[in-house]
Length: 400
Image (cartoon, rainbow, N blue to C red):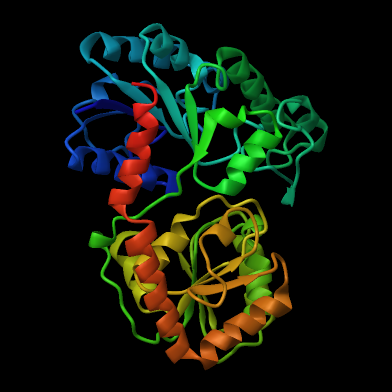
């Protein structure tokens, strides 16, 4: 039995990384391991006996001068991890997204305690100060993994000079504090992300791929034909939301449901109103049972991204519910979808091709159901919890 320190920003579910943080912890516990969470304190957090050790993180909503410093280096996080280590014997520390709230300030104490450090990479923070390889909604690799200052004149973080300078500063401080050197191993959630890290000088032998998973025992599929296509995720330009609504504009007989919130929502609302798209329904943010019912009753889901997606949980969850997915051929998405078997791959940003595949799903619902069955079978055989646990454990064993 191992004691694993499970480290991430949030002890509540805000996005896919948070869901993985919780499900991985549950998976480790299911196999008899002890799991200690370590995240930033927040009133949104789920209760845990370990919350007494959670440090205060930077306030991203209403930041003050102290929050700006805390975003780069958190002394509170450093002292909190030291206090935890005095009261718990830890075999291995498994990191997820920790920059900004916990910061690299915690790395030194863990290394001093001779604890192996593993990080699952859910984003591109090691090679991009904005963590997305996006600049003003366009793919960008100008920093080449280390020349972070190049982001400043481009104002890569929300077109804000101040935000970009802060992100760049954090990246340089984190690199100095060992966000590469102090880690024993990195786990990439896609082969695409792994290759991108290696391209920008992360040592090849220091990173391996373990795709995300879902515990299919918690997902009951629905093989009905459905009456709509569903997009769920951020409503942002980089997610291909405008490509999607343009593709769906003329498909009046096949409703599109959009579940999510984001910066592009005002523009999306305006497009729908100006073009009379009454068949496109904006549902707002959905989670839990509401989201489950939306997926279960769809014909298919769609992920038309225009950025380097890694291993989207939305695809895996759709598959687990027995629904095919139309996805853009970008980032790690092609590693999940077998074109023509459990969904379709379309060129990223191609309105016409996406429209054709949406039309096919509308006209061929019987075949879509068979695709959904194939997708569910894939989850059971390739992305199940037991296989994932063995892969994670094999990484741990190399450093124990």
